[in-house]
Length: 249
Image (tube, rainbow, N blue to C red):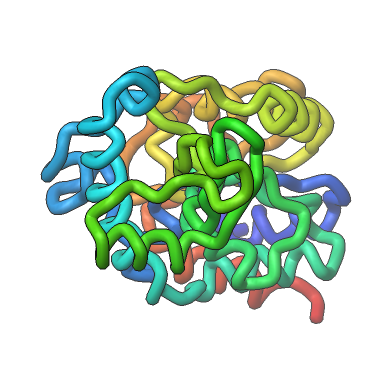
């Protein structure tokens, strides 16, 4: 029995499978990995959350970096891996997706049961009144004026992408629900993640410790490879398509 056949059988037998996705699923859509050569962090020093709060210069640099990143993902489209996960969810083969990504491509592909550990760059949030605005017009306004936008609702709150910055804690409720999914699932997919950024990277490990089968598909080795039931070194679109073809229609 091939690895694809094993995984397809496990998925068909499962009613609570969970997919955990990292940057690798979006690089296949042309979205650069922040850590890879040419990614944002190879070009710029990240702005830490406390600096964002305390320094107008840091806030301007934050918005400058985010505007560049915005153009890199706003034109991207979901690839077959995103689409397959959404289809598995619609067929009740997959409980949902836990993602480290902030690009919104899972939603565009049709995923509905989605936990975004690091938030979303598709919206801007006010740190004062919690109002949310679509990112496109505010990024465009920053590029036109060079001024960091103020909250259009309360008029005074700092506006920041609805993402988790360095030095900022993950949202407790999202992390708690992700942990609950991991503990309850019988099959966990770790897809396109280096599995080194904690606490997020601990979620697939928790699933394995709770008795789930663990399937890792990633281009590079990860710290959890030795505990995985199957490890595949291939593109996600290729691997998930191969598994999908073996499922009953």
